[in-house]
Image (tube, rainbow, N blue to C red):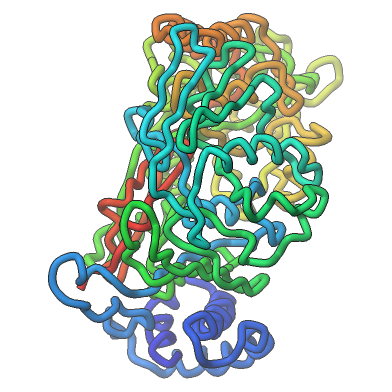
Length: 579
């Protein structure tokens, strides 16, 4: 504990004092996770007092806290060769806990992370948009694209030792539609599933769906039929017994302290090989600064996702390693096409011209690059040559010229008016102290627009954007899938209950791509989509941020398949601490 706060003293100038209290609670919870010490509940109850004491101690310590003072060191060597890779517990910080104990089909961040550890899919998608076999060895597709025959890998086991067979696949597709207590992402009404033999399954589509291989074959995780066959689907949400929540992946969920942490232990009989790490702990750290601080002070050894600021701060420090991958992270300002102003193409063009993308990137220090298409470079049909280049241009003069042409004249205070109405716009965000605010307000004012920047709680933000659509412009981000169809884009840019954008050209192009397995047809459709979306300023496209993974304490992720594609997947069985 004392060593941790020597490290905090070194970093104190970069963080507010409130972070220390969060890290004190974290240290106590890490102690509880590792065995011995107070329970997580006890740790939480005493965190405040310990933080105050520790902060005072830290203030009297010297600033020279080196790497040896990190509280979590790499494990001792087990021997030569691969044996040297075995051992150690990886700690990873996450902002919130599972939304429900039964995480298997929850669509939330921690649920996705636990599934990456505890489950293995049939296939995964690599950075070339190719399907890579996992628990399936291969698949065959019929000439008409309506039948897929999947060959499962022999020797794959559930984490209780039972074999995974075609029966588990069929059981899942029968059971899943009967679960009514959670929002389900998939509709299998177009699908019939047949067992060919113990390790072969045939999927028949009633209608063409070119997304099938890149969605169902990569995203679906099956259920162990021998466990779930006697459980009523109506009880799905009530299942919290970890012995029932088993998967087929490299780590098995062994312990959960609600609001504190989730611990997953090595599954010795994982089909690929014996995983290197002993355990992985998902540590719940709600405060963003505390989470970044925990990585900097080596309380957690893996930073995964949007750690751009931490990367910019530590990228030249040899004690930390960073892996940057091109990603599908598409920065956008969402516009509500039902709003009186945003329903007008000239006004959307005005907003787009007033987004100084380069300045915003510099302010956020997020390592991003300005977009040049409606798709990102990781999408296989990305083609900036077909996009409207002015959709990414910054020009106050062009924005002002449009406003002049639309009859908006400057008032006495410089804010434009038309028919007695002041030109006012609002950007809603879920980010407090957003560095974009001052830059955008100043730029919009130069064009004669009074811009309000409204931060709201993330839950309120989601409700206003995705439920009630009570917003004008929303600052957020989205990311396309990688594959023959960008499924996220179809949700956003076909008639949508979220953004209210509706262009029949785009809708038909998505239908053409989805209904064909011919790459030439798909390419033509997606190039038309990129062209039309940028010409329409369907959303205000900004930047593409890299996917960043940071490691410390000798954690090696070189062979784990980290990439920036969607859906993300990591082979945690290959992660290890270097000795």
